[in-house]
Structures are given as C-alpha cells and as structure tokens.
Length: 266
Image (tube, rainbow, N blue to C red; front, side):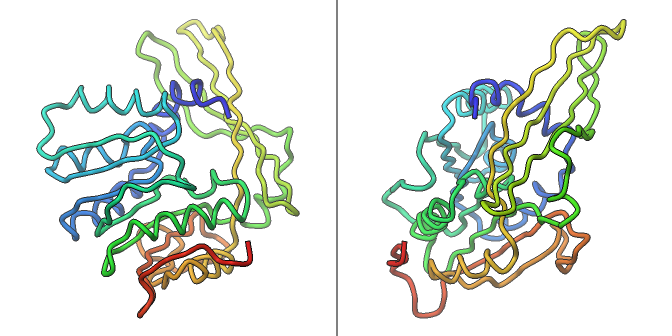
C-alpha cells in the first residue's frame, strides 16, 4: 500500500463515515478511565477526542505519514486535557513494556494483517498488552456472499464531499476478492472536481486486506487466550446476520489464562 498517499486522503474518506464506531470505542474507553492503547491509530480520529477529554492515550501505527498527520491534528485542538503518545510500531510485533485496561483496534485494523499468521500475531501482541481484567475491542467488516461476488471492474459510490475551494470530491471503490486466500486487493478512488465540473485529478489508492468470517474470529481469539464476551453485527449491539455490515468484538482474558504466547502450530 502507498502509505504516504493514503495518509493524505484518509481523513477525507473517513469524513463520509458514520460516527457510530467512535461512540462505541469512546464508551468502552470512558468506562475504564484509561489509559488506552489504540493499535492502528491512523490520523487520530478515535484517539484525539479521548485525549481532549482527559484520557491518557498511546497510539501505535506502522505508517509514519499517518502519525505525522495525527500529530498535526492533535496540535490543532491543543491543549489536550489528557495526553497522546504516538509510536511508530508494527502491530504484529511490538513491546511497550506495560499493560493497559483497554486495548482497541478500530477501523478494521486487524484486516491490514494479510495472512492468518500475521492476524494471530497481531491479536497475540494486543493481548500481551492487556491487563488481566482489561477489555479489548475491535471491528472488522462482515463478508457477506453478495459483497464477495462484487465485479472487480465495477466502481461503487462511497460518498461525495464538498471541496473547500469549490467543487467536490467524489469517493468510490472497487473490490477484488479472492475467496481462497480471503484477500481483497481492491482500490479506493478519489476524483477531485472543480466548480465547473472539470476533473482536476483522479487517484486510485490500493486497499489490501484479509477478511475474516465470524467463526474464524472466535477461533483466533481462543488461540491467543481471549474470551469473546460480546459479538455484535453493528456498534449498537445487534446480532450478527447476513445483513450485517460489521463484526464488533469485545473480549477479555480467558479465566486462568494471563500469560499469552503464540500458538505453537504456526
């Protein structure tokens, strides 16, 4: 993935998103009082408001351009009532030498690990940073069969956003699913259009993720010593059905299991 290009456009793409995920993660974090570890902090969409409210937040991301934008975004709302520490790290293998009462992986971050082994390593590493009585939360998209059958050449609309200088941004996407590897080698596309309707530029940004089925998520959590205590089809607590868009997971350390190690069958 072209991380630098993605960093420039990330906030524009997410400006079309519903804020239900932010409300969900903030609810989990506020209930604990912090500190919070966010894995895949990106540009700070979830983390910065928490730090503004007074939370101690530690955010990791492998994408240095994203972290730079997160730092800039934090400065625009300074001073923070809490604190935000941004660390460049690989979510599959990092050690902060501390544990947290809440660990989150918002915005489908887990799917950026594009193999089963990498996804297990990510969950294991997250679990190692979770306090014994702590709470982990993450979400991924629900891979319904209709979506998996998407035509890889067909664009679908994500949203239209007003451009500050006049005109608009048109955001579309294309999915290219491989059901054997469970990979989506898709694209998210932005067209910048001026007030006269002329297309100033068109960018196609690669999206490489590995989707997961509900039963696979439950199995992976069990392999790294996590009990799934809530398993929802949206951020409001609905059951998972074929109509769900999300899989939302709340997990805790399994009883009598606190020392976490990677499964030996990898």
